[in-house]
Amino acid sequence: MRILKITLQYDGTDYVGWQRQANGVSIQALLEDALEPIERSPVVVHGAGRTDAGVHALAQVATATLSAAIEPATLARALNAVLPPSVRVLTVQEAEPPFHARFSAAGKVYEYRIVNEPIVSPFLHRYAWHVPTPLDVEAMRKASRLLKGTHDFAAFQGSGSAVASTSRTIRAIDWVDGGGAVPLVMRIEADGFLRHMVRTIVGTLVEVGMGRWPSSQVTRILESGERREAGRTAPAQGLFLARVIY
Amino acid sequence: MRILKITLQYDGTDYVGWQRQANGVSIQALLEDALEPIERSPVVVHGAGRTDAGVHALAQVATATLSAAIEPATLARALNAVLPPSVRVLTVQEAEPPFHARFSAAGKVYEYRIVNEPIVSPFLHRYAWHVPTPLDVEAMRKASRLLKGTHDFAAFQGSGSAVASTSRTIRAIDWVDGGGAVPLVMRIEADGFLRHMVRTIVGTLVEVGMGRWPSSQVTRILESGERREAGRTAPAQGLFLARVIY
Image (tube, rainbow over all chains, first blue to last red; front, side, top):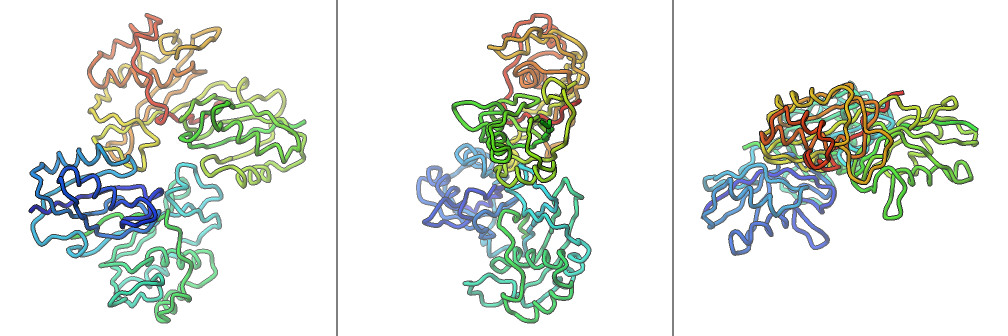
């Protein structure tokens, strides 16, 4: 059996998320269904990140174990021929055991996009959070720096999660201000992320950017360990899984 | 009565085009329906360019004659509150009679976007023509220069048109090659455009870019005056009305 590493880009607008679910179409199901006729047997794929409903991916990574003797480049073309245009296979590569999209990942990079203008362009409204109130990006940068490093991020975890540890290491967190026409983008790299962690960080930093909280509030939120102390969960449509690090 | 100049941006994907039609939702109908409760009477709007089904606008201009005493900025906000996110009013300005969106226009600028890569991103597929064959952009630029100036563009006019003259003046036509990640963009400015003229020019230039025709073929096509001599009509989703010149 071969292990294939599949790198995907998708517009998450119309999907229930990465993971197969009963209530709608998932990216995982689309990919598994596209692989089945090639393998002539059901295929299970594993994704590096379980993106939520409406979340996009610039480069999600999935692994599939196949016996079919198909060339990686041919497989990429065959998958793109059947997948909808909102999901594209960028590359397919052979991987060596025990490579696994999720368990082999050493880190991930997410991007979160905000349109901080009175009007959001029709070409961006599906791919950004519209915050019309002017944001103090310098205050948000200052607050972001307080999140860098290893912390217990329990306060930034969505409810209903059950993980062994809520400690994570944020290796980098930066805001790139395109200055109006281009959205304001937060780029965050960590060894791993808790459920809704990026969106709760963004929701919290936006409170700081609106001047409702001082930058130092994020340290108090971290120390509280309480989800209710943090800001709202920023909407899914602004979030992009940008890169998986191996 | 006041004349209001309304500048709009829209994603044309889900619409039958600018003009009101029986078979689906048009931008004109959305705007007229949004104005009616403000004016408390039916309103007719005139657009500078009758964009076809699936064609987008970065800055379409429309005029409306209103008696309602509403501030332009308030009107813009009121319209955006009821229009779908795929249609945004960028500005509303007072205009002096006899200003008319269409008849006062001195020229227009269109953009046409092509993704010239093996794979088109899920975030671009609605906003560009996917041409996977590598294009010779220099040959396309050379052919474009032959179209510049005043010519009879009958060969580049869609069928079923009835206009007094098929002579138009192309003031500028340029290709900007973003180099892969960003689409290849043709920017064209003329005093006016015939039906499907931009899309037929693009379809013809792509034949040149694929090496099927020499650059000089465009001169022969112009001189023939025959639509069948030109290339295919490039798909609507790559076309953007970029600017109306007054």
